[in-house]
Image (cartoon, rainbow, N blue to C red; front, side, top):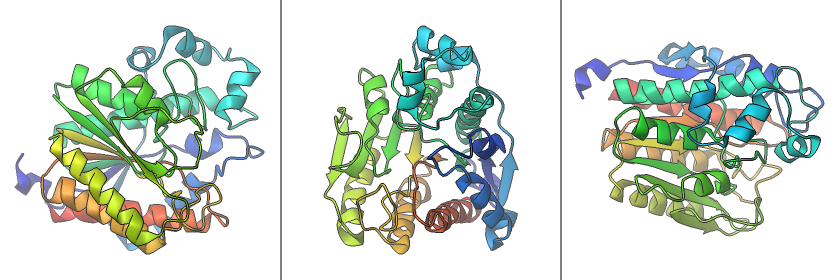
Length: 313
């Protein structure tokens, strides 16, 4: 990897208007967080260090590397049962839910391919859909972008080992079940012990966090997760960077400050990319603060930090 070519590289982020507009205004999910984050980044000092790319739609075959034919085909045909849609959430579904999902997944695949080909940090301004299992969706997740990208990186792009570092406040249960038989993909989940999903799956490394844990306790556990990640010697790290551990989050149950979240990202980017030059793909993950502005601020920090690291390498 030639570090000179990396210098002053802009942070490529995949983004589409459907990330917001593909969700009904009546859905319980805070759909405008994508649009608001985009507007906030546009006004920020880091904007000149960011390059926005438009995601293609993922193909059926790409989805099938992590999901069952029956589930994929019924979703793409708009034929899921009402109870399946309800389990996913995001209801009532719009006519654009299928294309939204295809583009969200396509953005993840393209960010992964770019990181492998060019090194550095890349991101999708959505996703981190870790509650989707092989044959059903759940918890606002239709398909599992982390699992699809990890398998794609190894089976189709020539990597030997990929690590998934999931720091969302909810366990990456779907990621764990889809990848349970893959020794070449490491699943690490740092999550609140008493939060959704209430039946946990088994990741390679599960690191439960007690409710109401604040910055110091949380960052110690993040540090442990990073160490486990680096011991695996991955060629690529998929970073699920949910900010729902914030004390302002309505679904989080933890008490992490905005500054604590910044420190978390700094540790991840510094240890994995700064010191080891391992490429990182950033997946947004959850964030449900009330007001949503706290979530947006933390995500702005995330992408600003990622852009800074890309520039400094």
